[in-house]
Image (cartoon, rainbow, N blue to C red):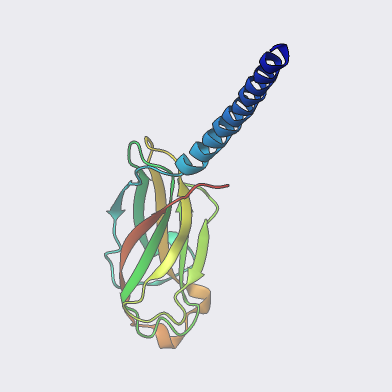
Length: 183
């Protein structure tokens, strides 16, 4: 009888030990899974506005970006949004004759910085083709707008007689993508 009680006690002890180990394992895996599943999930929404669109169509050759066209876009995450990436596009509606060289330039500046975030030209760009002038800029604030200044100008150093009298018109647009969890 004593051996029987001892055997039952041993079996119960082993079963409790296995249950304890299984419980710890389950709790660990549950915590790990919850972290993985909730990272980067939630509402994604961005508030943005095109404060100043590109309205002029004639450009004079210039040595400075400030003498050309100037567009302003501002963006921030909506309240309660997860982080996201922001893109800005310039879509020329009239560009013929200005897209065959590097004469028509653009630069994008963020929050009044003196260093351009992105620079480029419209060489090879067709009318009604969007050019991504800001690519995947990380937005993190839900309270403060990030300001993007976009400058477009004719580079005086590259102007030839072929571009004199040509016109340029464009629109600014934007889109965004949610940032998924990083593992």
